[in-house]
Image (cartoon, rainbow, N blue to C red; front, side, top):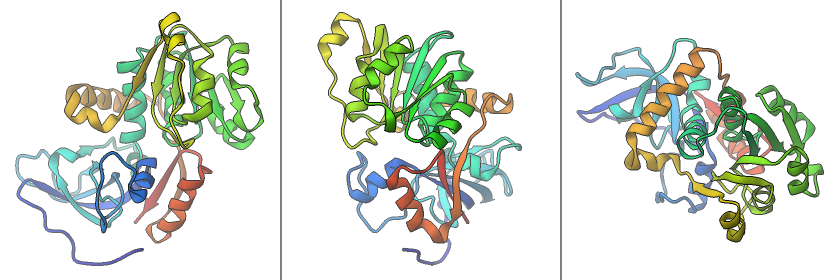
Length: 305
């Protein structure tokens, strides 16, 4: 439900931003259900990231009126927000507000997972589960940019075309694949699994991993975590890594910062092309949440204002 009110008054160390676009993430859906790890009691303004123009910035922040920035802070589904200066990141001139709004969490998650946790190497095989989703599609793109052979797993021929265009060498339609483990083994097996789905798909992909593989638990869009056979992990020396990107702001902020700098460089070099799956005005926020809930979207869902 939309509501109106006066513009927020920024504190002494806060930046006032006119939001032009904001992204929806699966975490927004979990927060609305009260199931997210960082709980927020209602009423609250949804949204975790967005992009817009600086209206006012404190001295010493390095920001000025008119600067184009990406914002990483709760409450971005609003026309104007007041956020800490550290939550604002200048964006390249060639990056649209719609692209920037959904860039940090999705690309940040995939890049940190694939480089910092999995140490993905050129020539290795990466399987991405949920490859057509807002996060999964970035993993396909980054995996390709890092020199890996990418297998994308998603539902539906139309969605798989987008996955292939993002850089997947092979694709598997999960709607028409009764045995994902065998399908992945037939393609030569997997060194790294990027699992944004969980449930039985994660379990099947785990069983198709090569010795020395790395399994990345990214999310559970399928409804529940996978049940992984740890005896296989032991015998095959498979490492299992969980990754909550937001936690790195405390766990290792330098790794988070270095990762984001590398991503902007990759974008400016033309190696990344953020896909805006659906863009709609803020007034259609209920429809946007329905689309997110149904998992029908390809790429990020963006609300404009």
